Length: 338
Image 1 (spheres, rainbow, N blue to C red):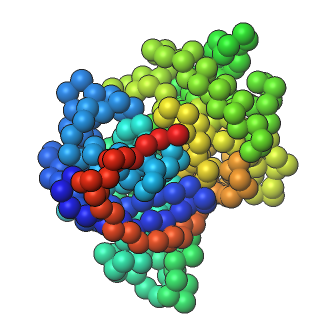
Image 2 (image 1 turned 60 degrees about the vertical axis):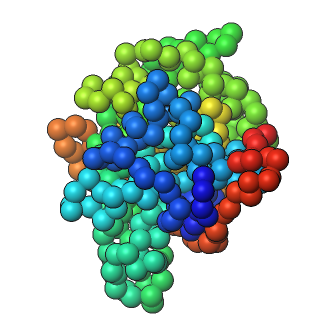
Image 3 (image 1 turned 30 degrees about the vertical axis):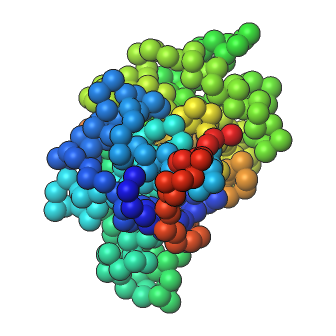
């Protein structure tokens, strides 16, 4: 890394999203999906990318003292074509993901707040974003000149397994598997003897890792059309809450990558959850709470040949603007992870 890196930071329902606006090295590739593949490097994986100039920036921003193990963000890159406003490479402390709903919500807010996409003082504006799993649209809601909410429509979501027995440590649990830009395993926390609380996060994280290991290589985790989207990305552990007049309500926590905790209800995970609920015949608006009590709402709005069209709504708020540098004499270099 040779120069400063500039970012605008948001949080979406508590989950950080660091948008890199300047200071990136050249990002080769003709499409966002190709850029992600090249960022991973020959022989690299989504959670173990090969070193390179671009990955130096990711590590700088996700490691202390400039970041932390729960940091998430995106590199803004050109879209695949003129049909989108921007493209993005999503990243976290372990590597690069194929989808990120909370990031899409933050990008929609940022695109309007920064003036990249024109929007009325009162009304809505659409922000079209190319992500590694496809093209998504964020509808930004405005009132009195302020962004009040963002609803994003994800790539099609579909179920590949229901009540799948999976070995998780000493026992077996029933797991649902759905794809919604990334592959999610969905498990009732009570079936593991757990509750979705902050105090039980160590147990929830350990259980999620066992479930992911138990699904390694399972056919249900393979994407039928694009193998780059295969493999369990996140494990969503949920508990039921009383239904609302509009539909079901649940609290969940998603453990993704190498044990990273989503502070939000997880945007693409909410899409996956909606697909599984629809397969159970449970419809309406899902009130989806996170482990810290923040909220998304989600609903199925249509169907395409590839699956269900889902819409997830949340809020994003700007938390800061930064200009990061790396002092060549700094003995910690790009930083460390705890």
